[in-house]
Amino acid sequence: MPTPSRLKKRRDFLAASKSSKAVTNSLILQERRRDDDSLLIRVGFTASKKVGNAVLRNRAKRRMRALAQEIIVKNGKRGHDYVLIARKNATTESPYDALQRDLIKGLERLNKAKCR
Image 1 (cartoon, rainbow, N blue to C red):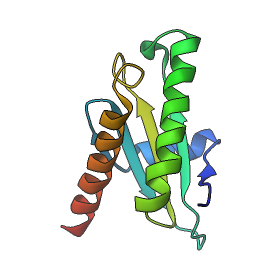
Image 2: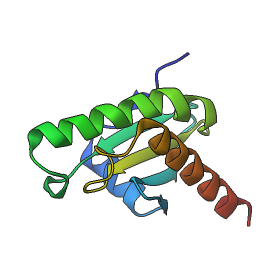
Image 3: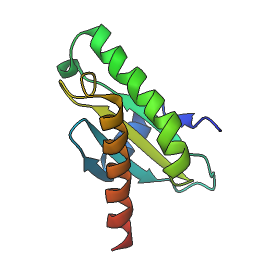
Image 4: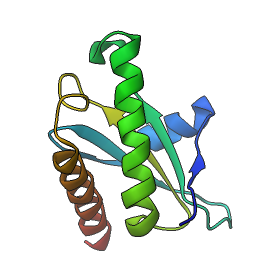
């Protein structure tokens, strides 16, 4: 199973923030179609200080990285960037299967919005 490429530059996160998003109970998912010819799936993660201290932010990002490896690799679209944003008291405390359902639901919402 290939590992998605990582978003690291601020301009990539800002570009994703201006595109479509899906809000779920435990996370926020942003999706952006890239204009280049690359077929890579790129993923970025963010957790603000609202999520909690450094330990909680790192836990949230670790859980989102595991979700991305498991779900976005299979269900994501090639040539797209995805940003997963942690939500306060939800990303770190929700059961892992609830996080999985929320991410799948978010991807489905984004795909439905594109079809219209």
